[in-house]
Image (cartoon, rainbow, N blue to C red):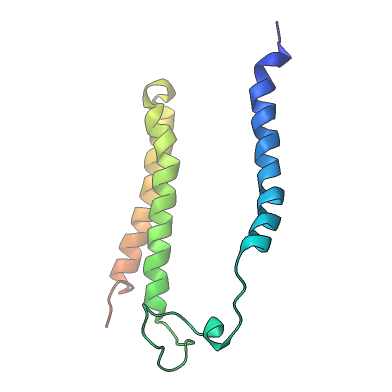
Length: 120
């Protein structure tokens, strides 16, 4: 038998979660201090006065390492549920997971051989 009362806590949580942002935003805008001045528009560098322009060009290698980091994190997050249900899923899921792990490894080896991971 389906009881709607089982979901009362869910609906209460959903209602409270949807009310927090519209209530908190006006409260923070009225209670936050407003400071206007030239210091407001300078970049903060650990308490040191900034020297030069903040718009400098970074090497593309920083972005490549960041993208490798994001891909490996996404791979880890996607493999965690599979690892929790390993016994129930069986061999087909194991084959799919190994393919899912192999593709970024092959891409990393290819990039390494092409010299994408060298700094100079």
